[in-house]
Length: 149
Image (cartoon, rainbow, N blue to C red; front, side, top):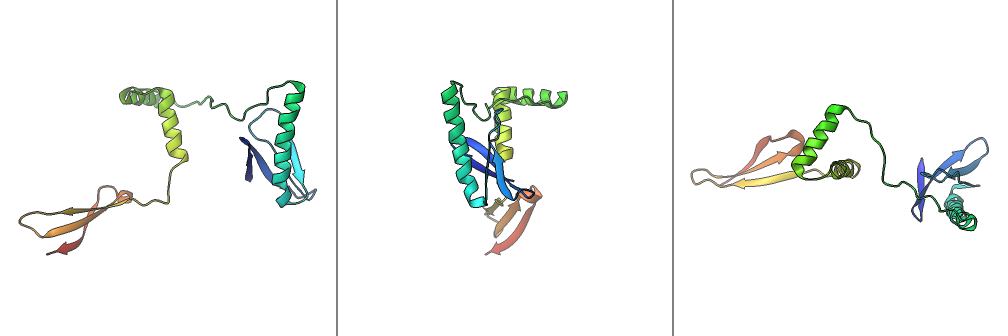
């Protein structure tokens, strides 16, 4: 499913095959706000219009528009993991909230397209210079790739 974005709101982009229209709804708010268009290229325009209409309607009726996602949620985890997380936070000198924020950020923003290879050159008086490589994919495995005299 595609996600549309505008003014801090996100919405879905779906195809209704029975009615042969594109449709969606604003995500992450309790109010139900939907939109539709006859073709995909007009769906973004209808989404923007729906967000603007939602904001204007809230203003007219004196209601505060809902903000998508407050940044607060409940998570249930095993007690052993909870204890381990609290201990790690204490060791790192941060709050449990900061620890969880860092962990989620690392998980969400992981870069799987990066390959970390490090080349190290070691020079010893009695030996020739050796160039070694290590791949994080195989841990601390070192491999000799060249001898330089």
